[in-house]
Image (tube, rainbow, N blue to C red; front, side, top):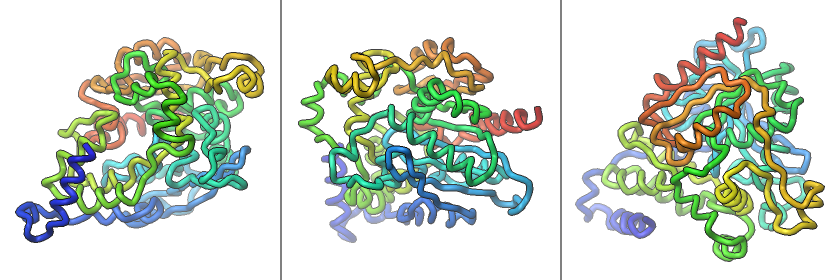
Length: 399
């Protein structure tokens, strides 16, 4: 795939002499914007905060306090918190047009929308003491995202709004860390009115994603290949490809395959004209240790804390020699789930295993044609998901 993109770059550099220049298309302006600029570009107000976790990480947190047509100052607006997936960012929720981006749709329904960013991604790569250049900064996995990031962000939201509860929306890994956090932290769970799980990932026995290959490598091999720091950051080359190559119609097929090869997609349900926006924000990066944690989950077929690789380390972290399991049956948060019939990450068979473990399942819908990315990029997202999600919020508020 990289060879195809390299060839595309060479054709680009040929300039006007290249016959493909006739297919040149303009770059979407958001492809060169950050989160706050994208929000502002579409006419929405925004606020930006630094969330400091108990272990010192500084997370970029964004707020859209109200939408178009909503009064600026009224009684407190219901809070909806959106959490992205693996190696992604808050941009996922605002990268489509406003009528098909969940964050903007919620704001236009007069909700107070908050966008989280997990440690290590493009917008959360700071620490009170540690440098991102150090291996110590990257010594985190899913456990820390659930134990520190979610509580810190939710605490900030509670502090800034004065409200005690909120609605939580997670996609993919954003659901994984929620299941982990809400099943182990009862005080945090009490703050969640409804947990909306889009393409939830808990067990991955049947997953077909190429990411499963991580489970085949030893830790030594993974570190030899990827080091012990950052995995899949967004680079200047990525941005060049997004804005100079993938903005051209002739390269849409190549770019779309490159972007979604690990998770699958449905080209018929994707706004191909916005590929440059999607790719300008992806991947957003995570830690190699997080990927090792996923490899462990692939192998074990159960949601378990990160195995530090030796008995002493496990004893230090868990007070036992083996990492504990996350018992998600203990989570009592009202939960609504949407899954995709074509999802190669959150496979339908894994979904069948998950559903009986959700103690307070209030809604479930299978979307037969959906793959993993359709849940926030799909052009029919409003019809298939968002209108029902908003209805569930309204019903909850009325009861």
